[in-house]
Image (cartoon, rainbow, N blue to C red; front, side, top):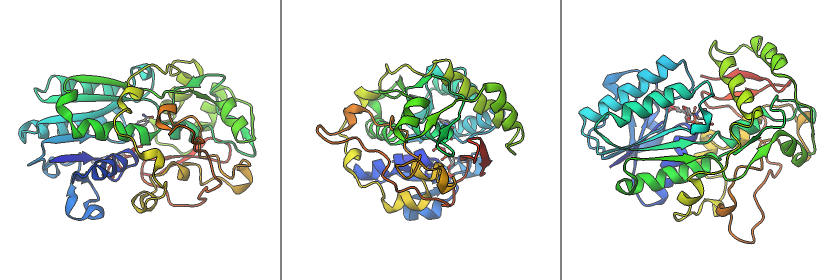
Length: 341
Ligand SMILES: NC(=O)c1ccc[n+]([C@@H]2O[C@H](COP(=O)([O-])OP(=O)(O)OC[C@H]3O[C@@H](n4cnc5c(N)ncnc54)[C@H](OP(=O)(O)O)[C@@H]3O)[C@@H](O)[C@H]2O)c1
């Protein structure tokens, strides 16, 4: 039996959904098991007694949230320990692209990879590229100006949808991917100027120093400004622009998501679509497309059926929707203003 952790989160819910679409009945390991009926199993990385992995043959370990390194490391250590003691056959672990080593949240991912590789378990590591949705949120225009300090740096942005497709494909046939570490940066790049142009906005990047000052008074948790600054710096320096990697090859598995309706009930209810990430902006700040939610970079060419127009913002932004936990929301000045936990 497959279990997906973080199943109520944005990536985990997509992975769970993809596995369901494959005709599998994956367990949803989550702190909110009631959302999944018979498939829900309470999993809480803070509580070893809530890490029942009995009967799980393949565990999709979706990395757990944004936090201090020691907290994330302890979370992942507990899960891997539980996998060992329950005899889990294979762990598919989401991690971070190697190009992201300068990002503030890289350390815990690298620690987890090593812990897993030394665990004696069969494993596959999915080194996910920086989310297109995160870039879109941080670079969202305000009053038709993109001010995020990305400079002219480009990002090989990866959409959660594609990353979820890969995770589901690997989890459905784990032995074919045993001992592999996949680099899953996006297959096309986006930059702030391109995003602005696509939205009919102008691009006027602020400086890192100015953004750091703004973040200091944004009411964030202590570790968050440094993490966000590392995203700006790494993109601005071009460190995350490389599109080479395994994503395109792995997306050659049967891929149907580009044809699926965007608003499945399970997605919209939980707020896992990317639209909501910028939906909290005042309507006056929206571009002509009606919302700044779509970074237009996130879908690989190979994922698009031939002859189809690429999907892009359709004016369906959902202002004011409640946000799921752990999201960083852009504020009126383009500064993340709120982190729901
Ligand atoms: N590639 C990137 O750009 C990037 C950027 C930032 C972070 N990440 C990593 O990618 C992960 C998934 O991204 P996402 O967008 O899906 O994040 P998300 O929506 O915040 O989901 C993270 C999920 O982690 C689970 N979690 C957190 N603390 C937990 C705990 N104590 N016990 C059990 N589960 C816990 C929760 O699952 P339940 O609600 O189901 O309990 C939560 O929904 C993040 O957690 C982070 O580690 C990636």
